[in-house]
Image (cartoon, rainbow, N blue to C red; front, side):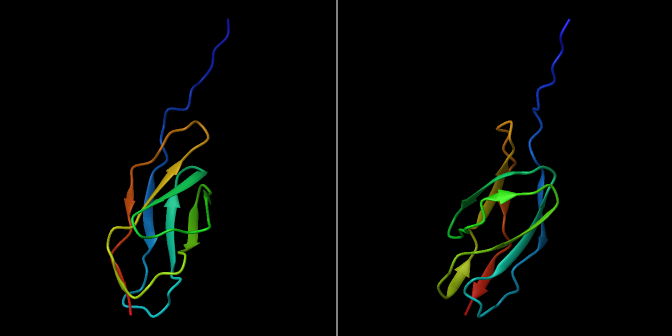
Length: 96
């Protein structure tokens, strides 16, 4: 008799520290939490060279951004069992 457990639970992610707005920092930092480690996927106009998350708070630095309003940035985390979190919408921020 063998039994196995399949991970079907997606990571849960949440905003911890939003980007201060307005900011003149063209590479702002952002912190989010994740209940599981995994690969980070970015959506919208924000990207980062950080591609993996830990099961805790994760601070990322966005790649260089031009002056403007950023309201479409999203993050998701996919765990080792290919379960993907819901998209986390990054709170809107302005670089000026």
